[in-house]
Image (cartoon, rainbow, N blue to C red):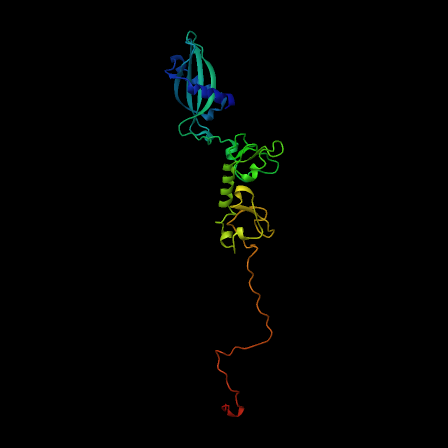
Length: 273
């Protein structure tokens, strides 16, 4: 089916349906041959019926014949063949042949814009991700953002960034990081000797996120260089206590607390064998 056929089929469905012209209703074999020519004899099945379509020009009659589509890949679809004629002329013209879905037809899922399909981690090397002008996560840099650290430079027009994160954008990011793999509920954090907030390698963020988030600066931590929640933690905590080293063994000693000490055996008192 051609792309223009899909447009025509949509228009056909929107036209008022009425009883077909008797001459056009009898053109079943003509419509079938048109469907076969557009596909193959093996893909055109039984005739499903004929309907008429209302026209603005009262001198023109249009009807649509439907045939089952027997192609395995189009179960539930049908061939729709539009035929037309002038009321004062018995000759019939085939207008179009289209493949349309019927009841129970297998259809593709609704189309979703790429901006809604994109998931975290999908962006690869060389990919571009344009940000919408009305993205609610961003606000113009010349307007108050609600973050005192950013508002200090908000009026430096032409020197700073065009847009900065809005309160909503910062809140979303904070919740995402706090609930993710560097948050307090992660198994790593539950086994840590202490939270990141008490670690010497913890670098707090500036502004309104300072009380909740920071960046790990320990190169031996699995979260080095990543944003971590103040309640997160790992085994590389700066104040992790070391296990005491065992005392060196200086001499061989025996513990006789649980044993009886026996006298040396006298050879003269041994039993005879």
